[in-house]
View 1: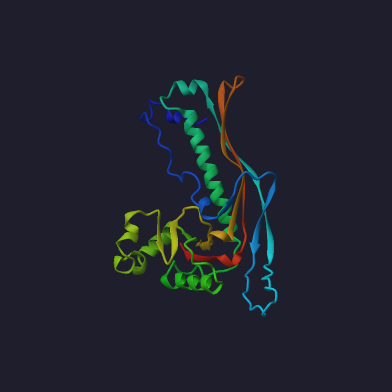
View 2: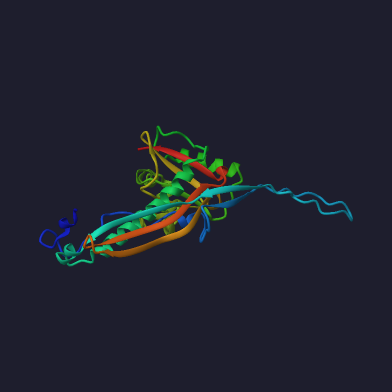
Length: 269
């Protein structure tokens, strides 16, 4: 009903997509399983092992690791729209492809939304939402992860809002070359950087709860994402409507596997 807004006589020949996150930014940063058959899948949560001595000629004692299955529910999501055939004649852009891309991007944001919802389930909190993302709050979260023996193996990730990214830029240890060297300066690109052995990145989709943005610092193994079907697009012609219907669909889910591996840093916004 609004396609006339993009007609050539009103707008330039090129149609620019509204600024939006193009696809998922978080899927590659968590445990992910693909080609799931069925409505649920299971991630294994493994407990800590302990080393012990062996008596001479005796049997080696087993660690008896605890295995706790964590169920992950998959849901079906769709994003579609109509493109009238005669409307296509009034514009010199491929409107069907524009809508297909928009639907794929919408589903990508839904993937991140599922992962963020799983992160929000963590009970571990550093500080409160009365202040921004301060150096003390970051160090408190850093200590909490260390106290739980969360591996410092390069798979730690911190996602913050854009306001919190600005807060980080005001911290010398985050943005000053005297502390981090010239290679890790955030001024070279605002998408992501490494600090404290962690990949820090800004994300516009984090939950805003009563004026506090829920930022998260987590380990890749603590969150699971499952996909029964990645994003697929389908374009079909409907003669009774004289229009194409562009449909995008996927079947995915996410879950919190180990809450000890996630620390939430609420920050005022």
